[in-house]
Image (cartoon, rainbow, N blue to C red; front, side, top):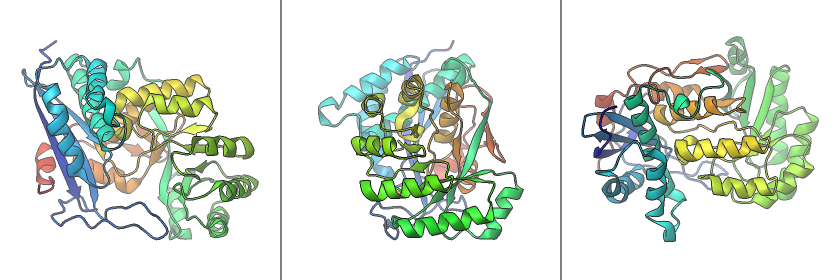
Length: 379
């Protein structure tokens, strides 16, 4: 195996228009109707490139839907000095030591965790390229190479014709993104179910309900045969989720805000969720794999979240899901996959109802470096 001494680390804060071209405008962050969280009208993310003294290169990505320059600065100013000269083969020790750099300052959360995730993914990719093994193989092997998916990003504006088109394409499972008004949410659910009575529908309300309204929605959805209810309550409210899961008659899902195994261990201790949804663009591969092991050990499946991050985080998530013994479904947004593939030399393949695990060493994807550099946000 070639030398794995790290010689260079680069962070690329990216902003893309929805057609895949670089977006040269400034950020115009807005809170959509009835949501307090801000979003960007463009697609923003951070790629990280790590190179060894022998010229091996690994790539990683963090889920950074807003503020990519913040995470890029953490990678460059804080993590890079600790990486240079280190042995990239020591993936887990490096991930631990990088986290320890800010132990007394919220070292496992927020933008710090996003930066750690991107570097961690790049290190796993680099190790795979050095050994010729895929990330799934490095994690112990793939239980599945065709990973079932469900269609997400389905909102109130989706028409009956669009639902039928997806059904005709082979999609059988959908996730509706609905507002905090329970009555309005049920009207939209009933409308979708009437169009496709044989489909399975989940509902995501983006952490905007309280305990009483969350339970009411859960019970009404259960009576309608819904698949699961996602992110009903505030993302940090573990005991609230535990009460909801105990009282509801359908599976309760959440977890895209989780960053590490210690957090998930606390949620498992109170039986907070039926389904765990780590986003590998937020956890990285090391912690994402640990979360999968913890959840599966507690007889809970993981169904990884994937929203605004692009192809590197998606590939990383697919490898973690493939290596988990209980990962029945993975989130799929056609627009996100198309945009992700715009920065890759070869596309990630998403069939109707499933992803194909990228084949090849490391993440199994090839970055189009010229396109990445062209999309860098002006600092």
